[in-house]
Length: 175
Image (cartoon, rainbow, N blue to C red):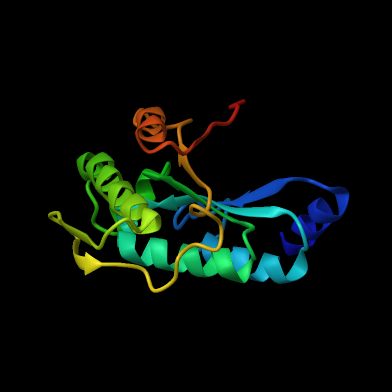
């Protein structure tokens, strides 16, 4: 995959996206952020996106904090793609019930966007995470913040979240 993204960069492609999966056996990438860090060292201009970070499985502060660090490490070439996760087995293995996914994803995205916008410290309490006067150590390298997109192909809440926060919408054709 690193060799492939190097070739894409050399051919002038604009962006490449790397998913997060834990159970499918097809895409064996447990952490797209680690892959972006490695690919950033091997490429020069291509944008590198986490597509997607499965929000119900991660504390939103850590997602925002790590993405801002990647935004700096890549000098503005990192993109954050988020979603509820397409593989049911991923969340089931970690004890997240299907009916919790949408709510957790919405709550997480709200917190992430507030942290990235850095308009004020973020205080937020849900049934699965809490933020107390939270703020990121670094502001985004990219102004006003790094690019964010919401998965919409397998999700009914993607397009409304995209509009609510003024972020991109990821879609894909299915065979």
